[in-house]
Image 1 (cartoon, one colour):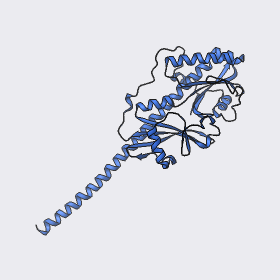
Image 2 (spheres, helix red, strand yellow):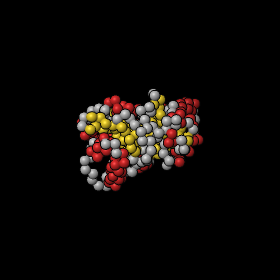
Image 3 (cartoon, helix red, strand yellow):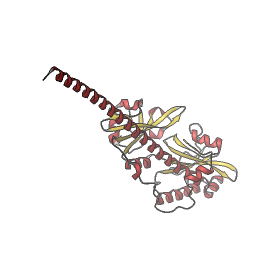
Image 4 (cartoon, one colour):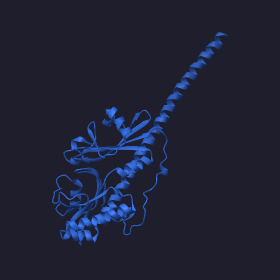
Length: 309
């Protein structure tokens, strides 16, 4: 082999090595961009599901607030009769829809508890000092829905109650994250809703829930596999990165709400690092027909002041 041939082979190998190096770098960039897009799509998908949950709760809140039996029993100070009416409505919802996790609270015009569908206590309790959403509805006389901190932390949809044109109180539909969690499991997304422990002085109903470093888990049933990852990788909960890769699992965060300008908690979402298609996820199915329902589109078009946060 001549020296020229040898130099040519060496030169060729160097060029091939450089090309392979940059090709590998290029492939890494492409894969990173694809993963960024996948995470972004998943976050958008989860946020759309959260918005749907809020709209559903808001629809029920507006519908119930216009129920004449509720209005008359609040006006006449008949909490027992009003609770019977709420039970009848919730039984119908549970029978014909997937709304098994719905609770309703009715407040007086001065922001005190009038009746709760799930318990017989705290009547007359003043909620104005720690329920921002309730105060907002009182001030604006407009429906409002958000992830809100109270004795628990969940989705709360609040609508004013009017007797004619007179404001006499408000009605609140409360739902947790169980339906959201079950729907996301169909898309192979694990979910753990977390509340920062420093807010447990307000969310007193959550003291006995499972703790996770500086957070408390909002639901009794949660993904044990995702919990194990978060327990063993505390740095993830610092939430400094857009997402984290732990083995084949991608973990990202969706803020749940704010109190005094501080993030109250997060939905921690975990999914496998594979291409996903959400077109198969079923829509919310009803088992029958409920008359006098209020379509989501109608809410958005006819009441411009409705706030969804």
